[in-house]
Length: 499
Ligand code: NAP
Ligand code: MG
Image 1 (tube, rainbow, N blue to C red):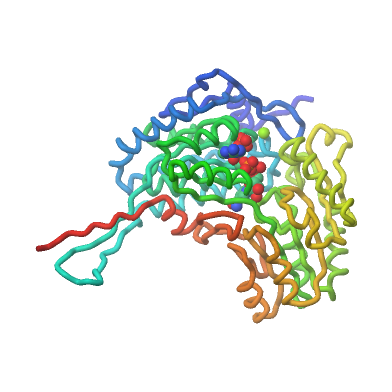
Image 2 (cartoon, rainbow, N blue to C red; image 1 turned 60 degrees about the vertical axis):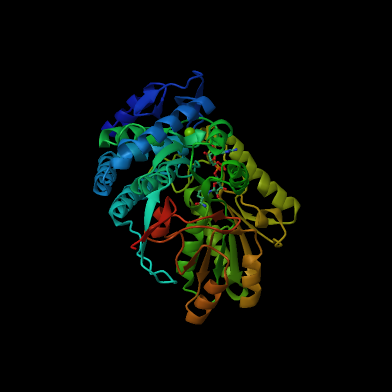
């Protein structure tokens, strides 16, 4: 069956035609080894594109370009000029939003509704937010405690070359979150997208050139985490690593970057509790719990995977969630009516399915879902039914470990002290939710929760101005807001004797 392609779809088809090169020093270049890997469409298992696969020699080229740009033209660029370039990039992305949404859906399996209405517009807004910060970085004048005839002040300076490593779950937005703040602060950047979803970052590279960023300010090196990620971590001439990904890989990066004492920001995994009290507006709470869990196939770091429901309403909440999960439309992510697309890969699908099997062995009851979808066209993709588990103890594997798929653990609780203790009984601390109409409970519980973000009577809402970061083993450092750009600067103290 032939199908007429829209203009954005035709542009994407043209983009996908050639083997994709890496962006180094303002030019598109093949890897030095000439090696190539394939990017797969998770909705049908087909090869979407061929991409050059880099190694440490390519990282080294990128570092040299980024260092030269940092010392050269970029260091002389006025803050207002950086504002202009970032705004220009935002404008170009906005103009080609549909292309990016379509390509992101093909490459990562995120539904077109999400890529079109959330990921791409959020990326545009994020670029504009940090474009504004370029001109607002200031130091202080410091009155010395010991007095005397001195003039003392601080300035904020960029760190230098930043190696930015991102995951596959919202590829374009993840890249932009690792790009805008460092550039606004005057750093140069090497982007390393996940090998599974490098395409929208590479397409963004075209816009970076078009916007007029000088060569070497932004470089993109493609290839595996093991090769490129490790080479970035070990490289002596990189000043900072901004990493989003799993806690395990984050720990490895922290250990290895000690050798060269790199600055690090780590945005890591989560196992977030979401707590519904009996007095909550239940319709809103159920909706929030559902979207907080199943959006993006549950492949969201802040997903509310541990749902604690006060006993009096446990039955009612559970029944409604089961009904919603069973009605959920799972399938082709390009269909605007689809609510849940495929998981990122066959391997990841199997990992998530294994978690469900382990849960059953440990005594859990599957209330709904639990199966890989195999009918018709779905068999070729990585589709799993939205799954709800119950009869779980706190020490069950699925309650303790991050699954990163559409699997909700629902558990009843009796009282506030108990639920606070259970919610905090995790090594993670990324996010948490509380649903109640009682102001005292809302404050008490949000104060007590060990998490970098606590949502009350809402879930998933984020904002460029609102700091975001993990407590405990969910990360180090903060993104968004002033803290997000401060993390890409260092403080210089200048002390002038006036004698
Ligand atoms: P991952 O395996 O840790 O990979 C993340 C990135 O690191 C990818 O680019 C990966 O490259 C690279 N990488 C892999 N091994 C590496 C190594 N040894 N050294 C350096 N880099 C390496 O995580 P993922 O499975 O892609 O993503 C899911 C995880 O990210 C979940 O744990 C999720 O919670 C977390 N996450 C956290 C946040 C947050 O803001 N806190 C947001 C989103 C996701 P390749 O993929 O090419 O191998
Ligand atoms: Mg892919």
